[in-house]
Figure 1 (cartoon, helix red, strand yellow):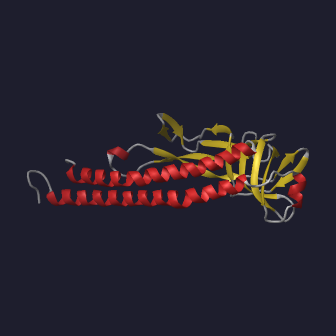
Figure 2 (cartoon, rainbow, N blue to C red):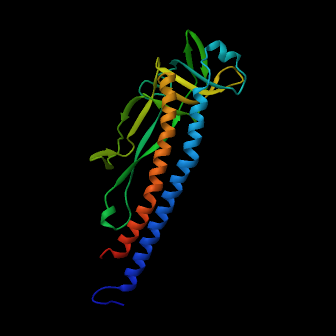
Figure 3 (cartoon, one colour):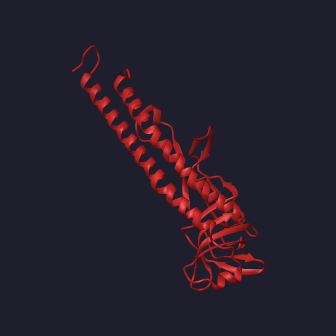
Length: 248
């Protein structure tokens, strides 16, 4: 049915669909805010407090620690820079630029668009020099890399590009962040049965900087969570009014 060139039923369906989408987005925003405020922030605060109370350790105290004990040590990180074949990195993580070509007919989505997708950290067996005594850092795939890491960008060789902050970037372009041989590093992890360390965090910097980064992460979760909770009703009611009263 058309009335003066308009289809009232279609317009109503579109407004209902938009309202439902806004409600779903608002609900997800609220849940995310509650999760950050009441789960992630407290958990990170407990972790930061636990880390700050770990004793200073040298190689001897690491060797005498019990298997499974939490260990926090700072020293000079060593590894084979030729092993990984990515710049001079001995351990790295990063993001890859993935370009998607839309298949729809909507003009607003007709151009290729991209996003940075995280790539899994690559951490082989390493050693940490503590006053000329070495502690083995075991290879691991689930390690968080942080601190003042070295950066390098390897451009993709694809002709398919998408804009990133106003600049065309080729599909497959990769940003690497990592450690080089001889870097100062703080390692947090668990004592292994063979006397080495199973790492959970590799941080480019000293212990004080690492502890500060842990406290900042807790504050970041809390602030972000509160902001998301605060914005939920604004997004919901503002979006609802826009969906209902927007002129077609």
